[in-house]
Length: 133
Image 1 (cartoon, rainbow, N blue to C red):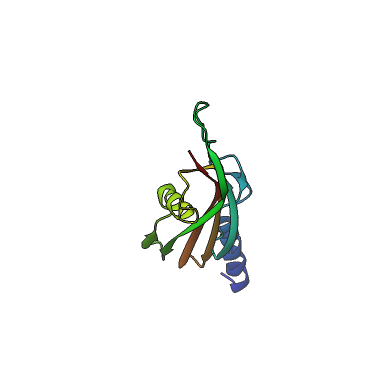
Image 2: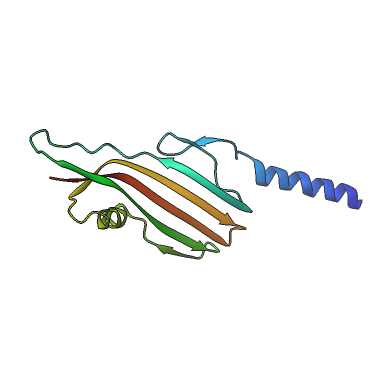
């Protein structure tokens, strides 16, 4: 087989394997997104959080805006570390306002970065309003 034919065949196969079905998709919250890149990615995605139902009989005081972030990291897809659970993020956000009991009007964003699949990092950021019952 000629080197040119082999190169073209290999290039076409790589294009099919690396680009198929990588167009825009909807994430599990209904926001448009794309999958992370195989070689490099630096993306931010919105996430949806169900609104907190406040009891109508319970009065609360709005204290201030709070924000927290946590990072999870995967190395070569073999070792993953980090804690970006809601409980951890909520505790970090409430550290800013020690009198607060809860957070309302919550917004969540995820920032995804990937370098050659070797280091894959997701930073989850929450923002909301701290309240005291």
